[in-house]
Length: 157
Image (cartoon, rainbow, N blue to C red; front, side, top):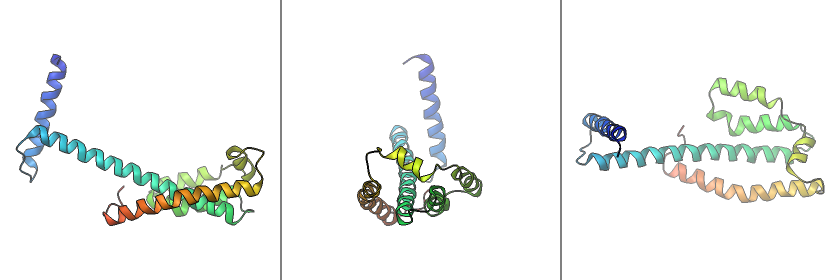
Protein backbone atom coordinates (compact mmCIF):
# COMPACT_ATOMS: atom_id res chain seq x y z
CA UNK A 1 0.00 0.00 0.00
CA UNK A 2 1.22 3.49 -0.77
CA UNK A 3 1.32 6.16 1.92
CA UNK A 4 -1.74 7.95 0.46
CA UNK A 5 -3.84 4.81 0.16
CA UNK A 6 -2.81 3.83 3.69
CA UNK A 7 -4.00 7.23 4.98
CA UNK A 8 -7.25 6.87 3.04
CA UNK A 9 -7.82 3.42 4.53
CA UNK A 10 -7.13 4.71 8.06
CA UNK A 11 -9.50 7.61 7.43
CA UNK A 12 -12.27 5.29 6.25
CA UNK A 13 -11.81 2.93 9.19
CA UNK A 14 -11.80 5.89 11.61
CA UNK A 15 -15.06 7.19 10.17
CA UNK A 16 -16.61 3.75 10.41
CA UNK A 17 -15.49 3.42 14.01
CA UNK A 18 -16.90 6.87 14.81
CA UNK A 19 -20.17 5.91 13.18
CA UNK A 20 -20.25 2.60 15.02
CA UNK A 21 -20.08 4.41 18.36
CA UNK A 22 -23.35 6.20 17.58
CA UNK A 23 -25.20 3.10 16.40
CA UNK A 24 -27.35 1.08 18.78
CA UNK A 25 -25.49 -2.04 17.61
CA UNK A 26 -22.71 -3.93 19.30
CA UNK A 27 -19.91 -4.01 16.76
CA UNK A 28 -16.95 -6.10 17.74
CA UNK A 29 -15.19 -6.22 14.41
CA UNK A 30 -15.01 -2.91 12.47
CA UNK A 31 -13.77 -4.62 9.29
CA UNK A 32 -16.77 -6.97 9.38
CA UNK A 33 -19.03 -3.97 10.00
CA UNK A 34 -17.51 -2.16 7.00
CA UNK A 35 -18.22 -5.16 4.79
CA UNK A 36 -21.76 -5.59 6.14
CA UNK A 37 -22.49 -1.89 5.63
CA UNK A 38 -21.14 -2.12 2.08
CA UNK A 39 -23.39 -5.11 1.35
CA UNK A 40 -26.41 -3.39 2.92
CA UNK A 41 -25.89 -0.21 0.88
CA UNK A 42 -25.36 -2.15 -2.34
CA UNK A 43 -28.50 -4.20 -1.71
CA UNK A 44 -30.44 -1.00 -1.14
CA UNK A 45 -29.11 0.50 -4.38
CA UNK A 46 -29.90 -2.69 -6.29
CA UNK A 47 -33.42 -2.72 -4.83
CA UNK A 48 -33.95 0.90 -5.89
CA UNK A 49 -32.59 0.30 -9.38
CA UNK A 50 -34.75 -2.77 -9.83
CA UNK A 51 -37.84 -0.88 -8.65
CA UNK A 52 -37.13 1.81 -11.24
CA UNK A 53 -36.86 -0.90 -13.89
CA UNK A 54 -40.22 -2.23 -12.73
CA UNK A 55 -41.75 1.24 -13.03
CA UNK A 56 -40.42 1.39 -16.58
CA UNK A 57 -41.89 -2.03 -17.35
CA UNK A 58 -45.24 -0.77 -16.02
CA UNK A 59 -44.95 2.22 -18.34
CA UNK A 60 -44.10 0.05 -21.36
CA UNK A 61 -46.94 -2.36 -20.58
CA UNK A 62 -49.51 0.42 -20.39
CA UNK A 63 -48.07 2.13 -23.48
CA UNK A 64 -48.36 -1.03 -25.58
CA UNK A 65 -51.89 -1.68 -24.30
CA UNK A 66 -52.94 1.84 -25.37
CA UNK A 67 -51.17 1.58 -28.72
CA UNK A 68 -52.86 -1.71 -29.44
CA UNK A 69 -56.22 -0.94 -27.82
CA UNK A 70 -56.90 2.22 -29.83
CA UNK A 71 -54.98 2.16 -33.06
CA UNK A 72 -56.23 5.63 -33.98
CA UNK A 73 -55.02 7.34 -30.78
CA UNK A 74 -52.00 9.57 -31.29
CA UNK A 75 -48.76 8.04 -30.05
CA UNK A 76 -48.16 11.06 -27.81
CA UNK A 77 -51.56 10.56 -26.15
CA UNK A 78 -50.74 6.88 -25.59
CA UNK A 79 -47.40 7.87 -24.07
CA UNK A 80 -49.00 10.50 -21.81
CA UNK A 81 -51.58 8.02 -20.53
CA UNK A 82 -48.88 5.41 -19.97
CA UNK A 83 -46.74 7.93 -18.12
CA UNK A 84 -49.64 8.97 -15.90
CA UNK A 85 -50.38 5.35 -14.99
CA UNK A 86 -46.90 3.85 -14.84
CA UNK A 87 -44.41 6.54 -13.86
CA UNK A 88 -46.13 9.71 -12.62
CA UNK A 89 -47.11 8.19 -9.24
CA UNK A 90 -43.39 7.81 -8.47
CA UNK A 91 -42.29 11.30 -9.52
CA UNK A 92 -42.50 14.67 -7.75
CA UNK A 93 -44.46 17.48 -9.39
CA UNK A 94 -41.52 19.16 -11.20
CA UNK A 95 -40.55 15.87 -12.86
CA UNK A 96 -44.19 15.20 -13.84
CA UNK A 97 -44.42 18.65 -15.44
CA UNK A 98 -41.16 18.16 -17.37
CA UNK A 99 -42.27 14.70 -18.51
CA UNK A 100 -45.64 16.05 -19.67
CA UNK A 101 -43.82 18.65 -21.76
CA UNK A 102 -41.35 16.12 -23.15
CA UNK A 103 -44.11 13.70 -24.15
CA UNK A 104 -45.66 16.31 -26.44
CA UNK A 105 -42.64 15.64 -28.69
CA UNK A 106 -43.39 11.93 -29.02
CA UNK A 107 -43.11 10.94 -32.69
CA UNK A 108 -46.14 10.03 -34.74
CA UNK A 109 -47.37 6.46 -34.57
CA UNK A 110 -45.96 5.82 -38.06
CA UNK A 111 -42.47 7.05 -37.13
CA UNK A 112 -42.57 5.18 -33.83
CA UNK A 113 -43.51 1.90 -35.51
CA UNK A 114 -41.00 2.45 -38.31
CA UNK A 115 -38.26 2.92 -35.72
CA UNK A 116 -39.16 -0.34 -33.97
CA UNK A 117 -40.00 -2.70 -36.80
CA UNK A 118 -38.71 -3.47 -40.30
CA UNK A 119 -40.74 -2.20 -43.25
CA UNK A 120 -41.45 -5.78 -44.31
CA UNK A 121 -43.71 -6.44 -41.31
CA UNK A 122 -47.46 -5.94 -41.64
CA UNK A 123 -49.41 -3.92 -39.07
CA UNK A 124 -50.84 -7.14 -37.63
CA UNK A 125 -47.37 -8.65 -37.28
CA UNK A 126 -46.18 -5.54 -35.46
CA UNK A 127 -49.04 -5.66 -32.97
CA UNK A 128 -48.58 -9.40 -32.55
CA UNK A 129 -44.92 -8.73 -31.66
CA UNK A 130 -46.09 -6.21 -29.05
CA UNK A 131 -48.45 -8.81 -27.53
CA UNK A 132 -45.69 -11.43 -27.48
CA UNK A 133 -43.36 -8.99 -25.73
CA UNK A 134 -46.03 -8.32 -23.10
CA UNK A 135 -46.60 -12.05 -22.68
CA UNK A 136 -42.90 -12.37 -21.83
CA UNK A 137 -42.67 -9.25 -19.65
CA UNK A 138 -45.85 -9.54 -17.59
CA UNK A 139 -45.04 -12.74 -15.65
CA UNK A 140 -41.64 -11.33 -14.69
CA UNK A 141 -43.11 -7.95 -13.79
CA UNK A 142 -45.89 -9.53 -11.73
CA UNK A 143 -43.47 -11.81 -9.90
CA UNK A 144 -41.17 -8.91 -9.05
CA UNK A 145 -44.03 -6.75 -7.76
CA UNK A 146 -45.32 -9.65 -5.66
CA UNK A 147 -41.85 -10.21 -4.22
CA UNK A 148 -41.54 -6.51 -3.37
CA UNK A 149 -44.98 -6.49 -1.73
CA UNK A 150 -44.24 -9.66 0.24
CA UNK A 151 -40.97 -8.19 1.55
CA UNK A 152 -42.24 -4.68 2.25
CA UNK A 153 -40.06 -2.84 -0.24
CA UNK A 154 -42.72 -1.90 -2.79
CA UNK A 155 -42.57 1.84 -2.10
CA UNK A 156 -38.82 2.25 -1.86
CA UNK A 157 -37.63 5.40 -3.60
